[in-house]
Image 1 (cartoon, rainbow, N blue to C red):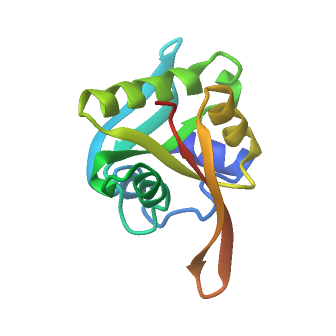
Image 2: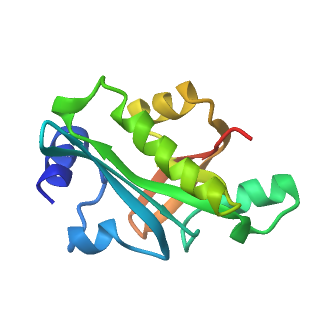
Image 3: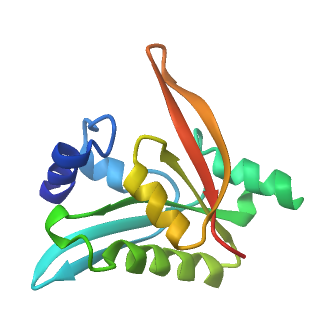
Length: 153
């Protein structure tokens, strides 16, 4: 939780700090979760899950490919400690989640808040395709712009 709090303080991720951060990290139908360590310390995290309520990318990818949303896996909860950035840790974590997704016969997709330009740049460097940018209503008083990505085939 300390690493997540550090990332939140520095980058504003997650946008809304969860009441129960541990539960937030393991939320949804989890297919896997991985961490990265560097010099004996935790420096990153990523999760893979089935799509859930609020996930836009699974439906978009499915519509484009004549499939059902259950043929996708959602890469989420990716964060890397500020002190460990620039070492390809984010790319390695994404790669691990993509590998597990493909092992299960699923296509990896993700949603990212448009204001997280560093994350979007990482996905695009890794060849992920921007499928759409949409407004999503997170609460009666909070609308957020979301980029929806699909991993390269």
